[in-house]
Length: 97
Image (cartoon, rainbow, N blue to C red; front, side):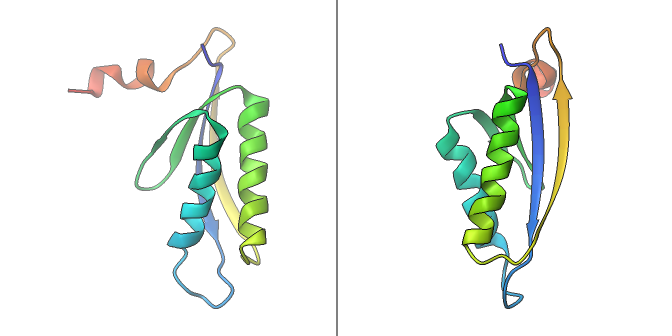
């Protein structure tokens, strides 16, 4: 069982003030390619894994956004860490139909 949940909202600045959604899509692609369990929500994406692994994904997300031309990125991150194990499913099972 994973020990960490990390939720992230990336807010990339765009070079010419164009729509940021294509940049956000690129950041989510980094998560998809990582192989970790994740859920995309309207305002943030939550990943499940080990802390070091998830922080490396965040680093890579920023790297990809800079490579795509974003001059700066703000990320809002929430981390829940439990040495005994934690999962998105366990935390939200009572709310699922």
